[in-house]
Amino acid sequence: MTALDTDLAGTGPGATDAGAVDHDRAARSAARDLRITRIEAVPFAIPYVKPLKFASGEVRTAEHVLVRVHTHDGLVGVAEAPPRPFTYGETQASIIAVVEQVFAPQVLGLSSLAREQVHARLRRTVGNPTAKAALDMALWDIVGQAFGATVTELLGGHGTSMRVSHMLGFADPAAMVDEATRMSETYGISTFKVKVGRHPVELDVAVCRALREAFGDAVELYVDGNRGWTPSESARALRLMDDLDLTLAEELCPADDVLGRRWLVRQSRIPVVADESATTPGEVTRELLGGSADAISIKTARTGFTDSQRVLFQCEGMGVEVVMGNQIDGQLGTACTVAFGAAYASTSRRAGELSNFLDMSDDLLAEPLEISGGELAVREGPGLGLRIDEAKLARYRTDR
Ligand code: MUC
Ligand code: MG
Image 1 (cartoon, helix red, strand yellow):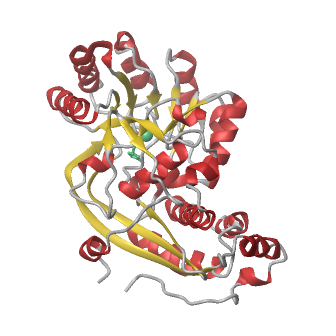
Image 2 (spheres, rainbow, N blue to C red):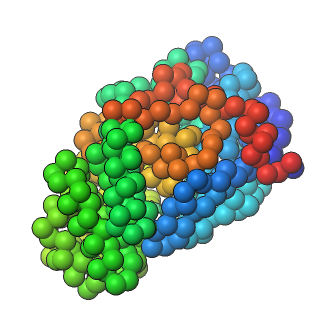
Image 3 (tube, helix red, strand yellow):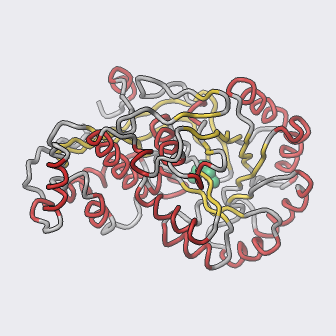
């Protein structure tokens, strides 16, 4: 049994915080008691129909953690944490352990409205980005439910849907063209992020060339190297693909090669996007001011809604473009990404990476997400508007 089930009614550390008083008043004015009483961290495993392969790893099964935050009033906020050991060092077991043993004891009793107090406590622990992000997003879900608004409305309310970009994992050129064709014909998707970073670089150059030849200018293409190439290999690959009208080049070389990435940015004719090298607001500052990135990938799976806002506003203030990224999310994570991305003009300009759940054999939502006409709509809410299919959860959870 790994789900934490701790009852608490105003006796946690937050109950004595001076700042909590105001939030409790706000909660009462919404006729709700939004204090956190219980947090569940439930591991589940859902196989992929088609594994996703990329330079830093491969995903065959979605071994994620469902996070459910319960309030005194009976509201339940949900989100999912996708462990990415090759990117953040988190595993399913580490996420459950940190939520149950470190975070839950510190935040039980705090109001769901007091998100800055919650974050002050989570920040005492370094790392663990997807565990923190899932807790954060579940709290926003609760606040939306309490106020009868969607999370998108709470965040910014710009729109109600986003254009979808599909991520094409490693395969040979013909298979990748086939997949893009299927995505285009079935879902109306016309933006593709092509995974690159293989050796020799010609392998990936051939894929991008085949895609451009197959689709002409009917599609947007950009590339993501997941740190697979050195700076000089990256520069060479970009030169070889210079005529292919790629719009972005993401994380082509190792995150620690700061000078190498700066060298690459200076000569690249397309914006260089930071993903794994800019996973926190502080890293975003370092990358942008250091000149080793021109654009930022925002992933709600690692910065939740609260820190994704911080990253976005930083970027807006500095005149830097953003793209809504994908952490190989399931449907819950994808619903969170579109909830955030649709909330602002600057996150909606580009297509968001919202389609990887299509490669999964099943999911946990009672009403599955649907991509149509190349768009994914925000759920109507309130909050995130997500209902878990309990029979599916019982089938896929791995702790019983
Ligand atoms: C991406 O944008 O890189 C693959 C690895 C990871 O950390 O995220 C995915 C997608
Ligand atoms: Mg990436």
